[in-house]
Length: 118
Image (cartoon, rainbow, N blue to C red; front, side, top):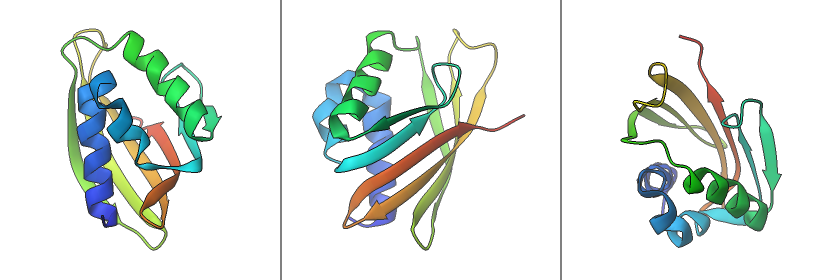
């Protein structure tokens, strides 16, 4: 799977949530780092099992009627970058974000998710 396919698979699993847990976890290296802002401040999870725990916490209370639109996936020298918009009636407005992926041997070794200021 190349970088473009890997990022597309990540978003496919993210849209399906808990039902795609195994598929999602297979995309990460054992010692991957996942940095996400969804709890209000950037939080870092290190290792596949820590990432699984972080994702499970989010899947336990999913956003209702969430729509995740990917606007761009750009392959970079060390991995990929994506830009996206997430909408849900539970959000005050659309959330725009950017993901920075470091990819080695077909696995995500670092994923940094951040919100973009509108």
